[in-house]
Image 1 (tube, rainbow, N blue to C red):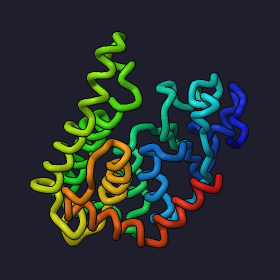
Image 2: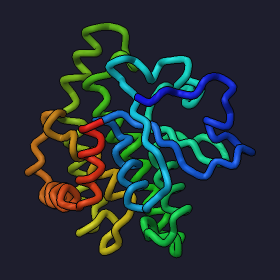
Image 3: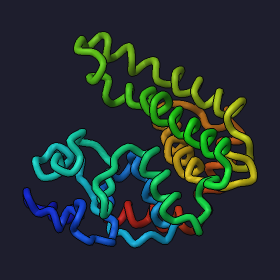
Length: 228
């Protein structure tokens, strides 16, 4: 991971009034930050990516906690301040790079539908997945934690059943219109096997995942994260 800025170094952080134009994006491989990373690359944004090593607990370091007090990724430093949470970052990238056409900015209903889908991924699907590795967030007793872990294939599977049946328009999340929701769905769908959920149960989602993997931009981001 690149050296994080020292405390008080507002110009390096890009806080309001610094005149910083390049975005700084903090991520860790194999996390939901992949969606925002793809969005930044797809939008042609002027940004630098900074890897946060979870193995070294860098997300809990005092330096990083000054950037994101939640101790999580992603985080995006902009000229107006710091953004966290994947749905917010995805919308920000789409709105600040309208020529990339990554969101239905001209249609209030479709924009709301996109945000509803992203909110479901963030608040429900990702939480169901997190019970496998981070059950300690919700329970202290080992027996309770194990019970949550065992439930993951069922709960994640049910989430994707709903996406397959009701929420996915095809060929993209919103139908014919490609959007940041596709990057987010791809990210979470990439975890299905690790959650002991068979992707073939969801033909539309599985086909979508393969289309995304074949995208040169997605491939470039995956390669960059693997090589960092």
